[in-house]
Image (cartoon, rainbow, N blue to C red; front, side, top):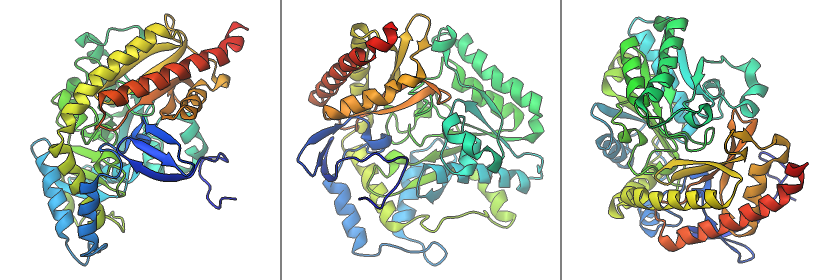
Length: 444
């Protein structure tokens, strides 16, 4: 009997050890971590240099409360992160995870509005579908029905605009007019709500779990920046999944030269070595808040020196191994192989992604984009089939969480060609088995 409970009653094997891209259970069975956990373990498991950095910090101190002490680890990591940001984003607020980072950004946007004499600005725009975290504030800017509906009476829902799912709408993602089309929906929605009431717009540069590695159409990110600037709306980029090299650049927004006002990071920043996240802010936003009495927000483990030492070790490994370049190179190879699987398996209706943030969507008909019947639960079935074959992948539903099965394939950035072969072989066999499983239901 387990005394733990999480999402359900299912049980999994007991983890014994993890090294590089592989994990072993207590029975000695090996799994290839094809999703980096939950898109977390960017530099792979048990990196000895990161473990050594954590050990050195443990020998000094494992905790120092921020109201009592500054720590060398947190100050150094803040400086290193600032140097990796677009110009002007030089103030860092550490947290323990992505949801905390998003909550922090939302509250800072609101406090900045108050501190600058704009108390009517409180709305945080986001997209539908989207996922920004599981706390009530983060859920308010999330659009994913299974996760949000139970808690709607408990939170202040925020305005949403459609995500730029050009492939579903029959539009050309390479055409700048497509990007303008979707971005102008944000412009119109801000005008309808009243620009003076809108504090910020939060968006993932490349979609994560809710849209399955959705890459924005040409011109979209640039137009969004222009719209936010014109209306005095802060642009919050949720880089929780895209940051720390996942897309082939340190930040996903670098692909489009989009300068945010606030960046939120987690996942790959701590890379599974310690709970760590960060909000990195334009320094112009911080001074008015501090001058008005301070940022009324905080977490006990903010700037924990052990977590920050892990983060420094992760940054060192990203640079030492040039993992952003490897993510770009191996990501291109992975995308080509996924397109090959699409040619072989009719169940795959779309392939998309950037770097090693990739996904494919299962469809009943790739021409009409009709989803598989939701009751077949195809996305979870494919995850289970892959797991049986020693391959870990991650799934969600693309269409507001209720239908549209997609599989995220996001291995660690240390991926090598032999690992890629193993991933594709596992997916190929799993897709063949899934097609056989679903055939009777689809024929009926």
